[in-house]
Each structure stands twice: as structure tokens, then as C-alpha cells.
Amino acid sequence: MIQVRFVVWKDRFLVLADCLTLLSADDPLSHVLDTRWGGFFTWHMLMVLISGVSCVLIFPRVAAGIAADGTGGRVGGFFESILVYLRDQVTRPFLGEEGDRYLPIVWTFFFFILFCNLLGMIPVVGRTATANINVTAALALVSFVLYHSIGIKKHGFVHYLMNNLLVGPWYLWPLMVPIEIMGHLIRPCALAIRLFANMVAGHTMLAVILGFTVVLTKSALVLGSTITAVSVSAAVALSFLELLVAFIQAFIFTFLTTVFLSLAVQSEH
Amino acid sequence: MGAGIGAGLAAVGAGIGIGRLAGSACESIARQPEASGDIRGAMLLTAAFVEGVALFAVVVCFLIQSGIMGLVKGTAA
Image (cartoon, rainbow over all chains, first blue to last red; front, side):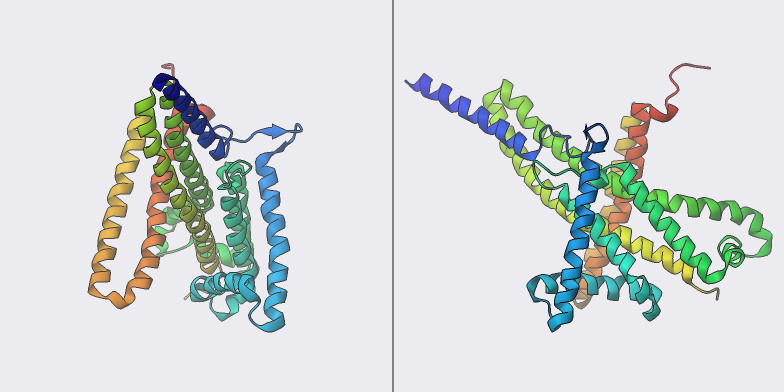
């Protein structure tokens, strides 16, 4: 009798371990690696589309709510606190009062990247679009074209080049020009790789830690159950960390874009 | 093997950097508790930058290990 009960309990425990792994993903790395369906479309394309459509649908309603009665209710108040924080702590210190005209793109960068990151945290159906180097490279390219074109439009092309490349005393210009060119080219690459690597690293670590449960529980029950308990609690803690990293990385991308924009727009002296 | 050593050294670099950052942030909060909000914000921001640098190194290690883009020269010239 006791042996029958033990066998039944062991089977139920194995089913639980399988369910835990399924809850996090179909296979552990599926949030990060992309798969095609329909020959051309991929999950990451769908996630980018969902994020963009969410932004387009949410924010006009928030703006209408705020314009109607000044507070916009709880949802309006929530978004307004983030938007005002981005305006007062990020845009205005670098760009001044006249930088308010750049607020829409700053807000768009932040919320688009945030929604992409957060969609990847949804258990079964979510995929992280920003864990794809193509998506982050596209975002960095948009940011690069944005601040350079705003700078060129404000200063004129030749003047803009002179301000940015010819820094320091005149005898150092042959040394400074290649360094400045490389610096300007590396900045969007750093933006793209920073966001991409943070998302991929987070999800990969989650996959590896949850993979311990499946591998060990199928072979050795007692050791596997201990390690399952440890790795599930580690996975919970890591998931909270990843939620934090989602917000922080969206903020860092936006903050750096604003800083580069302020560097492009500033007048010499 | 080089990729593994590189990734480990990147983790060491991130650990040292973020450890020093957190240490000086705690010390400055202890000196001036009313600035703790600003210090906490600055600490999170700069921790993300330090971690970004470490993750650049991890990405390079992945590229070395996977050998795409012709980065691994297996045979001698």
C-alpha cells in the first residue's frame, strides 16, 4: 500500500514539474528565439505590432481623459505620472523649456520599448521583441537618424560637422576627427546591444534555471524535488528582477537618446 | 575556452563596478539621508550602464563561441 501511494505521488510530482516548465514557455528559450509561421511572419513581428497598436490605442484616450477633467482618473493619473516624470527629470534638464517639442518622440521611445519588454514577460504567449537584435538595431537607427537630422536642421550640415568633429585645439584635429567619428558610430550600436543583451540575458538565465528542474526531477526524485524548490524560487526572484530591468532598460534608452539629442542641438559655447 | 574566460572576466568586472557603486551610494545615503531619493535614482541608472558594459563583453563572447561572421579562425594560415 505504501509503495503504491509513493508511486502515485511521484507521478503527480513529475506532472507538476512539467506543468511548471510549460507555464514559463513551450521550451525554455522560446521567448528569445524567434520562429516563423506562415512563411514570413514571426512572433517578434507580432509582438512589435501589438506594442505599437497598444501605444496608439492607449495614449489618445489617456490624453482625452486628462484634457477633459484635469485628472483622467486612475489610468490617466498613472500614465500622467510617468509622462510628467519623463518631462521634468529627463527632457527639461537637458533640452530646456523649448525641448517640449521633442517630448512626443521621447515618450514614444519609452513606452514602445517598455511594452515590448513587458510583453515578453507574459508566460505562454509572450515573446520578447526587444530580445531580437534586429528590433533593437532598428530602434537605435531611428534614434541615430533622429538626433542627427534635428542637429543638422538646426545648425546646417557643415556647421554641424564642424561643431561635432573639430573639437579641441587645432593641432589635435587630425587625431580627434577619427576618434569622434568612431564615437558617433559606436553610440547607436551601444544602445542597440545594451537593450538586446539585457533582454536576452534575463530570459536565458530564467530558461537555464528552470531547465534544472526538468533535467534533474526526471532522473532523481529527492534531489530533483529539492532543486526544483530552489530553482522555482530563484526563477520567481529573477522574474521580479526582469520586470525591473524592463523598466530600467526602457528608461536608459530614452535617457541616452535625450542626452544625444541635447548634444546635437546645443549651440557652441 | 576563450569565450568562457571572457564571460567570467566580464562578470568579475560587473561585480566590482556595481559593488563599488552600491558601496558609495550607501555611504552617501548615510551621510545625507534627505538626498536618498536622488541617490537611489542615480544608483539605478549608473548600475544599468555598468551592467550594459559587462553585457557587451558577454555578447562578444557569444559571437566568439558561435563562430558566426567569421570570427573564429579554426585553421592556421
